Length: 571
Image (tube, rainbow, N blue to C red; front, side, top):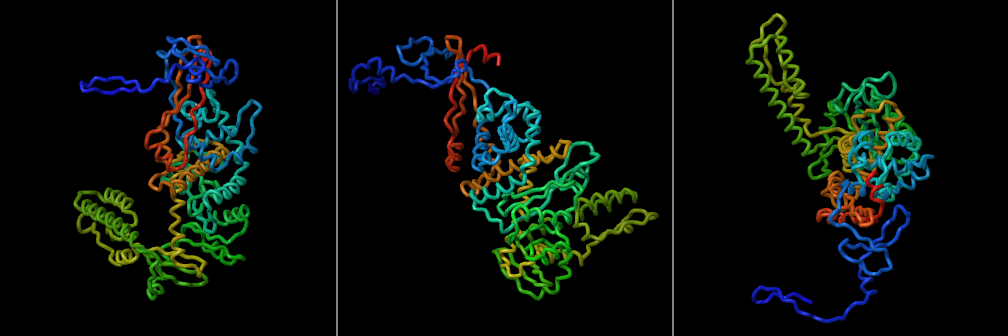
């Protein structure tokens, strides 16, 4: 039949073709059937569903009448980001590495499933192990993806799993190097090395690695540990080390170079580091060892004063549209003076803003009626706010017995310092023991240090590695180890996005996928049982576009199951 609308706007049915009546067997074939798991019987079989007000025909399969008006939708939980985390885990083939190292306990605890949960939690919604045990696991789809519906996760299992990880750290580093090569054709000719700190919310300990030290997190009131990290220029991590919180940067390089050589063997590598890490003695040892260890490091600007005259006689060479360099070979090293237009504009704008604010504040203080001690306190606050710009102004304060007025409290520009600062804006000095290298390539290697800074930002912001609350050194290192694994998933997604969807960040994709929820549809049957259909919500158009762009496909919907209604209600 077909429906046609007539002149009077009424719908008229027209018979198109008569095909005859269908027999009972054809009617049975047309009935929709589903495969369910019968929990009491422990078997899979097919059933056909009918509303309770309809009579079921004679069919080969079991007929189940359901009460649609009693249908319930329960347990909404985040599923999409958990599924994406499992996909990234499979892409790194971490099951191949961990399955032989993490077995199953006598009580039946699968440590690999616990590790997957810990890493996915750190990647998607990082927090404490207590929150994972108490809230997140029940509100996520991890149990569905691991095939453990209805099971809880014990808090002690999370800690016991962490205790099993550190013994395999070095083996994991070697395994990841091969995976980075297979997945992204990574090269290890250039390695970036830097350190950061992460702090604790706890009382100072009597022993262990938690110590007070220079805090890169601006939390000198908290004890901390130091994390030394080696990554490729693409941000792919190779190794890390956890050190005491009061460790000096200059004491870490020699031991770390030795560990990398023991882990990956000797090779022609270029080590790119910030200026505060190597000492002059360490650089000399790197030059004199056979074969020499290649390096490219930043140099304090104070050294530029000694080399300013030789550099004045050399021409600028353009290495990029807005970057020029000068090369100076001296005492077996190559000094590279770089001048960046973008950096010049940034530094000048920052200095102008600070100087303007400082000058205005000094004028305000000069017009106030203050005691000398009050003036010194306010000048200290102004100095802290101005930073290095304070050194460009000469401030004369009254002597202890003098009053504060316009004659005893004066300030003026230090024109010699100001001219020197203006002359060095946008310039920085590098040094290397690779005199034959192309200057453009050396400059490109050095600016890649921003990649390791991006790694630290991801660990501290997106993966929330700080603050730490653990007390034992082993648990502290296990926490950082899990964060390292989560970052491996994070950077794997980032590398995919770099080529397939460069406008998105890994965090944006995880948040987008978190909108796909898993729910349980409960449909009571007339015989006192309960038909449960776990279903993830259908992806929206933006999800479909994202999955298509990343060449990913959602799995089929989970299989339904039939249970005794009373048992499921009690559970």
